[in-house]
Length: 496
Image 1 (cartoon, one colour):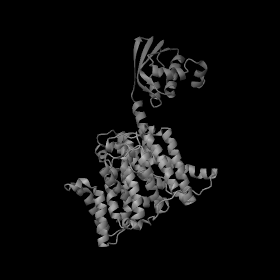
Image 2 (cartoon, helix red, strand yellow):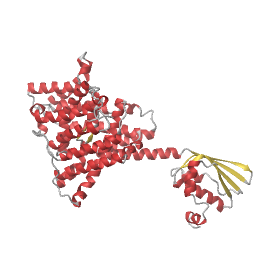
Image 3 (spheres, helix red, strand yellow):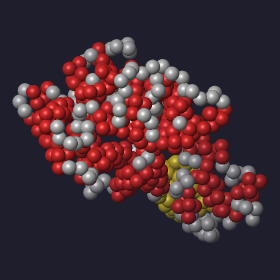
Image 4 (tube, one colour):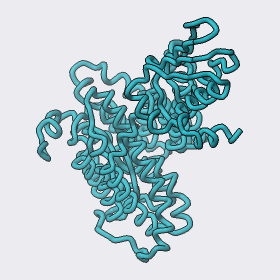
Protein backbone atom coordinates (compact mmCIF):
# COMPACT_ATOMS: atom_id res chain seq x y z
CA UNK A 1 0.00 0.00 0.00
CA UNK A 2 1.40 3.43 -0.91
CA UNK A 3 2.27 5.92 1.82
CA UNK A 4 -0.41 8.36 0.63
CA UNK A 5 -3.22 6.12 -0.58
CA UNK A 6 -6.40 8.10 -1.30
CA UNK A 7 -8.48 5.73 0.80
CA UNK A 8 -6.32 6.10 3.92
CA UNK A 9 -5.67 9.84 3.59
CA UNK A 10 -7.97 11.84 1.34
CA UNK A 11 -11.33 10.04 1.21
CA UNK A 12 -12.92 12.24 3.89
CA UNK A 13 -11.06 15.59 3.84
CA UNK A 14 -13.78 17.84 5.29
CA UNK A 15 -14.77 15.46 8.11
CA UNK A 16 -11.13 14.76 9.00
CA UNK A 17 -10.16 18.45 9.05
CA UNK A 18 -13.00 19.51 11.35
CA UNK A 19 -12.63 16.51 13.66
CA UNK A 20 -8.85 17.03 13.80
CA UNK A 21 -9.39 20.62 15.03
CA UNK A 22 -11.84 19.41 17.72
CA UNK A 23 -9.36 16.76 18.88
CA UNK A 24 -6.50 19.30 18.94
CA UNK A 25 -8.54 21.63 21.18
CA UNK A 26 -9.45 18.76 23.52
CA UNK A 27 -5.83 17.52 23.58
CA UNK A 28 -4.40 20.78 24.96
CA UNK A 29 -5.81 20.70 28.53
CA UNK A 30 -5.35 16.92 28.71
CA UNK A 31 -1.69 17.14 27.69
CA UNK A 32 -1.13 19.87 30.28
CA UNK A 33 -3.01 17.89 32.96
CA UNK A 34 -1.03 14.71 32.22
CA UNK A 35 2.24 16.71 32.41
CA UNK A 36 1.20 17.94 35.86
CA UNK A 37 0.38 14.33 36.93
CA UNK A 38 3.83 13.16 35.78
CA UNK A 39 5.48 16.11 37.55
CA UNK A 40 6.96 17.76 34.44
CA UNK A 41 6.57 21.08 32.61
CA UNK A 42 3.35 21.42 30.49
CA UNK A 43 5.39 21.66 27.29
CA UNK A 44 6.67 18.08 27.80
CA UNK A 45 3.10 16.74 27.39
CA UNK A 46 2.19 19.19 24.61
CA UNK A 47 5.30 18.44 22.52
CA UNK A 48 4.72 14.70 23.08
CA UNK A 49 1.09 14.93 21.92
CA UNK A 50 2.09 16.86 18.78
CA UNK A 51 4.94 14.53 17.89
CA UNK A 52 3.15 11.23 18.61
CA UNK A 53 -0.01 12.26 16.72
CA UNK A 54 1.97 13.37 13.64
CA UNK A 55 4.26 10.31 13.51
CA UNK A 56 1.49 7.78 14.21
CA UNK A 57 -0.53 9.26 11.32
CA UNK A 58 2.17 7.83 9.00
CA UNK A 59 3.37 4.76 10.91
CA UNK A 60 0.24 3.50 12.74
CA UNK A 61 -1.90 0.55 11.75
CA UNK A 62 -5.31 2.05 12.61
CA UNK A 63 -6.45 5.07 10.52
CA UNK A 64 -8.52 7.58 12.48
CA UNK A 65 -7.12 6.60 15.89
CA UNK A 66 -5.58 9.36 18.01
CA UNK A 67 -2.36 8.79 19.97
CA UNK A 68 -0.77 11.33 22.33
CA UNK A 69 0.36 11.79 25.93
CA UNK A 70 -2.04 9.85 28.18
CA UNK A 71 -3.01 9.66 31.84
CA UNK A 72 -2.31 5.93 32.09
CA UNK A 73 1.29 6.50 30.96
CA UNK A 74 1.72 9.66 33.08
CA UNK A 75 0.83 7.75 36.25
CA UNK A 76 3.71 5.32 35.61
CA UNK A 77 6.25 8.16 35.27
CA UNK A 78 5.67 9.88 38.63
CA UNK A 79 8.31 8.00 40.65
CA UNK A 80 10.96 8.12 37.91
CA UNK A 81 10.59 11.90 37.48
CA UNK A 82 10.55 12.54 41.24
CA UNK A 83 13.65 10.42 41.96
CA UNK A 84 15.77 10.99 38.84
CA UNK A 85 14.39 13.97 36.88
CA UNK A 86 13.18 14.75 33.37
CA UNK A 87 16.28 13.60 31.47
CA UNK A 88 15.85 10.03 32.74
CA UNK A 89 12.18 10.15 31.68
CA UNK A 90 13.26 11.11 28.14
CA UNK A 91 15.76 8.21 28.11
CA UNK A 92 13.03 5.83 29.35
CA UNK A 93 10.74 7.15 26.58
CA UNK A 94 13.34 6.26 23.93
CA UNK A 95 13.78 2.76 25.40
CA UNK A 96 9.97 2.34 25.54
CA UNK A 97 9.86 3.03 21.80
CA UNK A 98 12.58 0.45 21.10
CA UNK A 99 10.75 -2.21 23.17
CA UNK A 100 7.47 -1.49 21.34
CA UNK A 101 9.12 -1.85 17.93
CA UNK A 102 10.59 -5.20 19.06
CA UNK A 103 7.07 -6.24 20.24
CA UNK A 104 5.74 -5.36 16.78
CA UNK A 105 8.34 -7.54 15.04
CA UNK A 106 7.66 -10.39 17.49
CA UNK A 107 3.96 -10.06 16.55
CA UNK A 108 2.92 -9.76 20.21
CA UNK A 109 -0.30 -8.05 19.07
CA UNK A 110 -1.52 -11.59 18.35
CA UNK A 111 -1.91 -11.97 22.14
CA UNK A 112 -5.02 -9.76 21.81
CA UNK A 113 -6.79 -12.96 20.72
CA UNK A 114 -6.73 -14.03 24.36
CA UNK A 115 -8.55 -10.90 25.56
CA UNK A 116 -12.24 -11.80 25.66
CA UNK A 117 -15.06 -9.47 24.68
CA UNK A 118 -16.15 -9.16 28.33
CA UNK A 119 -12.65 -7.88 29.26
CA UNK A 120 -12.73 -5.32 26.40
CA UNK A 121 -16.19 -4.16 27.54
CA UNK A 122 -14.95 -3.87 31.14
CA UNK A 123 -11.89 -1.94 29.95
CA UNK A 124 -14.06 0.47 27.95
CA UNK A 125 -16.46 1.04 30.85
CA UNK A 126 -13.57 1.58 33.29
CA UNK A 127 -11.99 4.13 30.96
CA UNK A 128 -15.31 5.96 30.61
CA UNK A 129 -15.57 6.15 34.42
CA UNK A 130 -11.93 7.31 34.74
CA UNK A 131 -12.47 10.00 32.06
CA UNK A 132 -15.54 11.24 33.96
CA UNK A 133 -13.72 11.13 37.32
CA UNK A 134 -10.87 13.16 35.85
CA UNK A 135 -13.37 16.01 35.23
CA UNK A 136 -14.60 16.13 38.85
CA UNK A 137 -11.80 18.41 40.15
CA UNK A 138 -13.05 21.02 37.66
CA UNK A 139 -16.59 20.67 39.05
CA UNK A 140 -15.92 20.71 42.80
CA UNK A 141 -15.63 23.84 44.93
CA UNK A 142 -16.50 26.13 42.02
CA UNK A 143 -19.06 28.89 41.43
CA UNK A 144 -22.44 28.35 39.78
CA UNK A 145 -21.04 29.89 36.56
CA UNK A 146 -18.97 26.73 35.94
CA UNK A 147 -22.02 24.47 36.26
CA UNK A 148 -24.04 26.77 33.99
CA UNK A 149 -21.29 26.78 31.35
CA UNK A 150 -20.86 23.00 31.56
CA UNK A 151 -24.61 22.35 31.21
CA UNK A 152 -24.80 24.86 28.33
CA UNK A 153 -21.86 23.06 26.68
CA UNK A 154 -23.58 19.67 26.98
CA UNK A 155 -26.77 21.26 25.60
CA UNK A 156 -24.89 22.53 22.54
CA UNK A 157 -23.12 19.18 22.02
CA UNK A 158 -26.31 17.11 22.09
CA UNK A 159 -28.82 19.55 20.53
CA UNK A 160 -26.73 21.25 17.80
CA UNK A 161 -26.73 18.15 15.50
CA UNK A 162 -30.56 18.47 15.26
CA UNK A 163 -30.34 21.89 13.57
CA UNK A 164 -31.17 21.75 9.84
CA UNK A 165 -28.29 22.04 7.31
CA UNK A 166 -25.41 23.11 9.63
CA UNK A 167 -26.21 20.61 12.41
CA UNK A 168 -24.63 17.71 10.55
CA UNK A 169 -21.83 19.62 8.80
CA UNK A 170 -19.99 21.11 11.81
CA UNK A 171 -18.94 18.94 14.79
CA UNK A 172 -20.96 20.00 17.84
CA UNK A 173 -17.96 19.75 20.26
CA UNK A 174 -16.18 22.39 18.13
CA UNK A 175 -19.26 24.65 18.27
CA UNK A 176 -19.40 24.12 22.05
CA UNK A 177 -15.77 25.23 22.51
CA UNK A 178 -16.08 28.27 20.21
CA UNK A 179 -19.41 29.50 21.66
CA UNK A 180 -18.43 29.07 25.32
CA UNK A 181 -15.05 30.74 24.71
CA UNK A 182 -16.89 33.71 23.17
CA UNK A 183 -19.28 33.91 26.12
CA UNK A 184 -16.36 33.72 28.58
CA UNK A 185 -14.39 36.47 26.81
CA UNK A 186 -17.39 38.82 26.50
CA UNK A 187 -18.74 38.30 30.02
CA UNK A 188 -15.35 38.23 31.77
CA UNK A 189 -16.71 35.79 34.37
CA UNK A 190 -14.26 34.48 36.98
CA UNK A 191 -13.85 30.81 36.01
CA UNK A 192 -10.82 28.65 35.20
CA UNK A 193 -9.50 28.67 31.65
CA UNK A 194 -6.81 26.69 29.81
CA UNK A 195 -4.33 29.47 30.64
CA UNK A 196 -4.74 28.68 34.35
CA UNK A 197 -3.58 25.08 33.80
CA UNK A 198 0.01 26.11 33.14
CA UNK A 199 2.15 28.24 30.87
CA UNK A 200 1.90 27.28 27.20
CA UNK A 201 5.19 26.92 25.26
CA UNK A 202 5.98 29.77 22.85
CA UNK A 203 8.60 28.03 20.72
CA UNK A 204 8.68 25.08 18.36
CA UNK A 205 10.29 21.91 19.80
CA UNK A 206 13.96 21.24 19.00
CA UNK A 207 15.92 18.00 18.66
CA UNK A 208 17.73 17.00 21.84
CA UNK A 209 19.43 13.86 23.16
CA UNK A 210 18.63 13.02 26.82
CA UNK A 211 21.45 14.30 29.06
CA UNK A 212 22.10 11.03 30.91
CA UNK A 213 25.28 8.95 31.23
CA UNK A 214 25.25 6.01 28.79
CA UNK A 215 26.04 3.41 31.46
CA UNK A 216 24.62 0.13 32.71
CA UNK A 217 23.50 1.95 35.85
CA UNK A 218 21.31 4.28 33.78
CA UNK A 219 19.83 1.27 31.97
CA UNK A 220 19.07 -0.40 35.32
CA UNK A 221 17.18 2.73 36.41
CA UNK A 222 15.09 3.25 33.26
CA UNK A 223 14.52 -0.35 32.11
CA UNK A 224 11.75 -1.31 34.62
CA UNK A 225 9.87 1.91 33.81
CA UNK A 226 10.36 1.42 30.05
CA UNK A 227 8.94 -2.12 30.25
CA UNK A 228 5.86 -0.91 32.18
CA UNK A 229 5.34 2.01 29.79
CA UNK A 230 5.72 -0.26 26.74
CA UNK A 231 3.25 -2.84 28.09
CA UNK A 232 0.60 -0.34 29.21
CA UNK A 233 1.04 1.72 26.03
CA UNK A 234 0.58 -1.28 23.73
CA UNK A 235 -2.29 -2.66 25.80
CA UNK A 236 -4.22 0.60 25.68
CA UNK A 237 -3.39 1.07 21.98
CA UNK A 238 -4.51 -2.46 21.04
CA UNK A 239 -7.73 -2.11 23.06
CA UNK A 240 -8.45 1.29 21.51
CA UNK A 241 -7.76 -0.09 18.02
CA UNK A 242 -10.28 -2.88 18.67
CA UNK A 243 -12.90 -0.31 19.78
CA UNK A 244 -12.27 1.94 16.75
CA UNK A 245 -12.47 -1.16 14.52
CA UNK A 246 -15.95 -1.75 15.95
CA UNK A 247 -17.04 1.90 15.68
CA UNK A 248 -15.98 2.18 12.03
CA UNK A 249 -16.56 -1.45 11.01
CA UNK A 250 -13.08 -1.57 9.42
CA UNK A 251 -10.01 -3.73 10.20
CA UNK A 252 -6.61 -2.56 11.49
CA UNK A 253 -3.04 -3.89 11.39
CA UNK A 254 -2.19 -4.25 15.08
CA UNK A 255 1.41 -5.41 14.62
CA UNK A 256 2.04 -2.33 12.47
CA UNK A 257 0.41 -0.27 15.23
CA UNK A 258 2.91 -1.70 17.78
CA UNK A 259 5.85 -0.64 15.59
CA UNK A 260 4.23 2.73 14.88
CA UNK A 261 3.75 3.44 18.58
CA UNK A 262 7.43 2.63 19.11
CA UNK A 263 8.62 4.98 16.35
CA UNK A 264 6.31 7.74 17.70
CA UNK A 265 7.66 7.39 21.24
CA UNK A 266 11.27 7.53 20.01
CA UNK A 267 10.38 10.71 18.12
CA UNK A 268 8.73 12.16 21.23
CA UNK A 269 11.76 11.41 23.43
CA UNK A 270 14.06 13.13 20.93
CA UNK A 271 12.18 16.46 21.09
CA UNK A 272 11.73 16.56 24.84
CA UNK A 273 8.35 14.82 25.05
CA UNK A 274 7.08 12.05 27.32
CA UNK A 275 5.91 8.58 26.23
CA UNK A 276 2.32 8.21 25.05
CA UNK A 277 -0.09 5.80 23.40
CA UNK A 278 -3.53 5.63 21.78
CA UNK A 279 -6.25 7.60 23.59
CA UNK A 280 -9.68 6.05 23.71
CA UNK A 281 -11.38 9.34 24.67
CA UNK A 282 -9.82 11.37 21.86
CA UNK A 283 -10.27 8.55 19.36
CA UNK A 284 -13.99 8.45 20.19
CA UNK A 285 -14.18 12.28 19.84
CA UNK A 286 -12.48 11.94 16.45
CA UNK A 287 -14.81 9.21 15.17
CA UNK A 288 -17.96 10.89 16.57
CA UNK A 289 -16.88 14.22 15.00
CA UNK A 290 -16.55 12.60 11.57
CA UNK A 291 -12.83 11.67 11.47
CA UNK A 292 -12.02 8.46 9.63
CA UNK A 293 -8.58 8.54 7.96
CA UNK A 294 -4.96 9.20 8.84
CA UNK A 295 -5.46 12.85 7.83
CA UNK A 296 -7.55 13.50 10.97
CA UNK A 297 -4.69 12.26 13.19
CA UNK A 298 -2.12 14.36 11.31
CA UNK A 299 -4.28 17.51 11.47
CA UNK A 300 -4.91 16.99 15.20
CA UNK A 301 -1.14 16.95 15.85
CA UNK A 302 -0.23 19.84 13.56
CA UNK A 303 -3.13 22.08 14.67
CA UNK A 304 -2.28 21.34 18.32
CA UNK A 305 1.26 22.66 17.86
CA UNK A 306 0.19 25.69 15.77
CA UNK A 307 -2.48 26.68 18.29
CA UNK A 308 -0.21 26.24 21.31
CA UNK A 309 2.76 28.11 19.83
CA UNK A 310 1.13 30.77 17.64
CA UNK A 311 -2.38 31.19 19.09
CA UNK A 312 -1.52 30.78 22.77
CA UNK A 313 -3.36 33.99 23.74
CA UNK A 314 -6.61 32.69 22.20
CA UNK A 315 -6.21 29.11 23.35
CA UNK A 316 -5.55 30.19 26.94
CA UNK A 317 -8.99 31.88 26.89
CA UNK A 318 -10.87 28.59 26.35
CA UNK A 319 -12.86 27.98 29.57
CA UNK A 320 -12.20 24.61 31.20
CA UNK A 321 -15.98 24.17 31.50
CA UNK A 322 -16.19 23.85 27.68
CA UNK A 323 -13.59 21.09 27.64
CA UNK A 324 -15.19 19.39 30.65
CA UNK A 325 -18.47 19.28 28.69
CA UNK A 326 -16.65 17.66 25.72
CA UNK A 327 -14.99 15.08 27.98
CA UNK A 328 -18.30 14.27 29.72
CA UNK A 329 -19.75 13.67 26.25
CA UNK A 330 -16.79 11.36 25.57
CA UNK A 331 -17.30 9.39 28.79
CA UNK A 332 -21.04 9.00 28.05
CA UNK A 333 -20.28 7.95 24.47
CA UNK A 334 -17.48 5.60 25.52
CA UNK A 335 -19.44 3.73 28.20
CA UNK A 336 -21.09 0.58 26.85
CA UNK A 337 -24.68 1.07 28.01
CA UNK A 338 -25.70 -2.20 26.33
CA UNK A 339 -23.47 -4.02 28.82
CA UNK A 340 -25.83 -2.91 31.63
CA UNK A 341 -28.86 -4.21 29.71
CA UNK A 342 -27.00 -7.42 28.85
CA UNK A 343 -26.31 -8.26 32.51
CA UNK A 344 -29.63 -10.15 32.57
CA UNK A 345 -28.94 -12.02 29.32
CA UNK A 346 -25.25 -12.89 29.69
CA UNK A 347 -23.90 -15.77 31.82
CA UNK A 348 -22.85 -14.90 35.39
CA UNK A 349 -19.19 -15.65 34.58
CA UNK A 350 -19.17 -13.13 31.69
CA UNK A 351 -20.75 -10.46 33.89
CA UNK A 352 -18.29 -11.17 36.70
CA UNK A 353 -15.28 -10.78 34.37
CA UNK A 354 -16.63 -7.49 33.01
CA UNK A 355 -17.42 -6.02 36.45
CA UNK A 356 -14.10 -7.23 37.94
CA UNK A 357 -12.18 -5.56 35.08
CA UNK A 358 -14.04 -2.29 35.76
CA UNK A 359 -13.58 -2.41 39.54
CA UNK A 360 -9.85 -3.27 39.44
CA UNK A 361 -9.06 -0.73 36.70
CA UNK A 362 -10.94 2.10 38.44
CA UNK A 363 -9.59 1.06 41.86
CA UNK A 364 -5.93 0.94 40.79
CA UNK A 365 -6.09 3.56 37.99
CA UNK A 366 -3.89 1.05 36.14
CA UNK A 367 -5.32 -0.32 32.88
CA UNK A 368 -2.72 -3.10 32.68
CA UNK A 369 -3.64 -4.56 36.10
CA UNK A 370 -7.37 -4.36 35.30
CA UNK A 371 -6.99 -6.15 31.97
CA UNK A 372 -4.62 -8.75 33.49
CA UNK A 373 -7.18 -9.60 36.21
CA UNK A 374 -9.96 -9.76 33.59
CA UNK A 375 -7.98 -12.08 31.29
CA UNK A 376 -7.01 -14.30 34.24
CA UNK A 377 -10.61 -14.62 35.44
CA UNK A 378 -11.89 -15.24 31.90
CA UNK A 379 -9.30 -18.01 31.44
CA UNK A 380 -10.26 -19.63 34.76
CA UNK A 381 -13.98 -19.55 33.97
CA UNK A 382 -13.33 -20.93 30.49
CA UNK A 383 -11.15 -23.76 31.84
CA UNK A 384 -13.81 -24.60 34.42
CA UNK A 385 -16.58 -24.57 31.81
CA UNK A 386 -14.68 -26.77 29.34
CA UNK A 387 -13.53 -29.02 32.20
CA UNK A 388 -17.16 -29.79 32.98
CA UNK A 389 -17.76 -30.98 29.42
CA UNK A 390 -16.66 -34.49 30.27
CA UNK A 391 -18.85 -37.62 30.37
CA UNK A 392 -17.64 -41.13 31.16
CA UNK A 393 -20.13 -43.97 30.85
CA UNK A 394 -19.60 -47.73 31.06
CA UNK A 395 -21.26 -50.98 30.08
CA UNK A 396 -20.58 -54.64 30.71
CA UNK A 397 -19.41 -56.40 27.56
CA UNK A 398 -19.08 -59.80 29.24
CA UNK A 399 -20.66 -59.92 32.74
CA UNK A 400 -18.02 -60.38 35.46
CA UNK A 401 -15.22 -60.50 32.91
CA UNK A 402 -15.05 -57.41 30.65
CA UNK A 403 -16.25 -53.77 30.95
CA UNK A 404 -16.01 -50.96 28.38
CA UNK A 405 -15.68 -47.31 29.44
CA UNK A 406 -16.73 -44.61 26.94
CA UNK A 407 -14.95 -41.24 27.45
CA UNK A 408 -16.61 -38.18 25.84
CA UNK A 409 -15.15 -34.66 26.16
CA UNK A 410 -12.00 -32.72 26.95
CA UNK A 411 -9.34 -34.06 29.32
CA UNK A 412 -6.85 -31.45 30.58
CA UNK A 413 -5.61 -29.98 33.88
CA UNK A 414 -9.08 -28.77 34.95
CA UNK A 415 -10.87 -32.08 34.27
CA UNK A 416 -8.15 -34.66 35.05
CA UNK A 417 -9.40 -35.38 38.60
CA UNK A 418 -12.95 -35.99 37.33
CA UNK A 419 -11.51 -38.31 34.67
CA UNK A 420 -9.71 -40.46 37.27
CA UNK A 421 -12.66 -40.48 39.69
CA UNK A 422 -15.03 -41.90 37.03
CA UNK A 423 -13.37 -45.35 36.98
CA UNK A 424 -14.13 -48.19 39.40
CA UNK A 425 -10.73 -49.71 40.17
CA UNK A 426 -12.04 -52.15 42.85
CA UNK A 427 -14.44 -54.00 40.54
CA UNK A 428 -13.36 -57.64 40.19
CA UNK A 429 -13.00 -57.97 36.44
CA UNK A 430 -10.53 -59.47 33.94
CA UNK A 431 -10.40 -56.80 31.24
CA UNK A 432 -11.24 -53.10 30.82
CA UNK A 433 -11.54 -51.41 27.43
CA UNK A 434 -11.34 -47.61 27.47
CA UNK A 435 -12.88 -46.12 24.32
CA UNK A 436 -11.28 -42.72 23.65
CA UNK A 437 -12.69 -42.09 20.17
CA UNK A 438 -14.77 -39.11 21.42
CA UNK A 439 -12.22 -37.76 23.89
CA UNK A 440 -9.38 -35.29 23.44
CA UNK A 441 -6.21 -35.15 25.58
CA UNK A 442 -4.73 -31.65 25.71
CA UNK A 443 -1.79 -31.51 28.10
CA UNK A 444 0.71 -33.37 30.29
CA UNK A 445 -1.74 -33.43 33.22
CA UNK A 446 -4.28 -35.26 31.05
CA UNK A 447 -1.67 -37.82 29.95
CA UNK A 448 -0.62 -38.38 33.58
CA UNK A 449 -4.29 -38.94 34.50
CA UNK A 450 -4.55 -41.61 31.77
CA UNK A 451 -1.33 -43.20 33.06
CA UNK A 452 -2.73 -43.36 36.59
CA UNK A 453 -5.97 -44.99 35.40
CA UNK A 454 -4.14 -47.65 33.37
CA UNK A 455 -1.60 -48.37 36.13
CA UNK A 456 -4.24 -48.57 38.88
CA UNK A 457 -6.26 -51.12 36.87
CA UNK A 458 -3.12 -53.17 36.21
CA UNK A 459 -2.24 -53.09 39.93
CA UNK A 460 -5.64 -54.70 40.59
CA UNK A 461 -4.77 -57.43 38.06
CA UNK A 462 -7.05 -56.09 35.34
CA UNK A 463 -5.94 -56.06 31.69
CA UNK A 464 -6.39 -52.60 30.07
CA UNK A 465 -6.87 -51.82 26.38
CA UNK A 466 -7.04 -48.25 25.00
CA UNK A 467 -8.99 -47.92 21.72
CA UNK A 468 -10.04 -45.13 19.37
CA UNK A 469 -7.39 -42.59 20.36
CA UNK A 470 -7.56 -39.74 17.82
CA UNK A 471 -4.43 -38.75 15.88
CA UNK A 472 -4.15 -35.39 17.70
CA UNK A 473 -4.43 -37.01 21.16
CA UNK A 474 -2.18 -39.92 20.17
CA UNK A 475 0.64 -37.46 19.41
CA UNK A 476 0.81 -36.21 23.02
CA UNK A 477 -0.07 -39.59 24.62
CA UNK A 478 2.60 -41.52 22.67
CA UNK A 479 5.20 -38.90 23.55
CA UNK A 480 4.55 -38.47 27.28
CA UNK A 481 2.63 -41.54 28.53
CA UNK A 482 4.62 -43.88 30.79
CA UNK A 483 2.18 -46.71 31.60
CA UNK A 484 4.26 -49.14 29.53
CA UNK A 485 7.58 -48.10 31.17
CA UNK A 486 8.09 -50.03 34.49
CA UNK A 487 10.64 -47.60 35.96
CA UNK A 488 8.55 -44.52 35.14
CA UNK A 489 5.46 -46.28 36.55
CA UNK A 490 7.18 -46.74 39.92
CA UNK A 491 8.19 -43.06 39.90
CA UNK A 492 4.67 -41.88 38.97
CA UNK A 493 2.93 -43.97 41.63
CA UNK A 494 5.43 -42.95 44.34
CA UNK A 495 7.20 -46.30 44.40
CA UNK A 496 4.47 -48.18 46.28
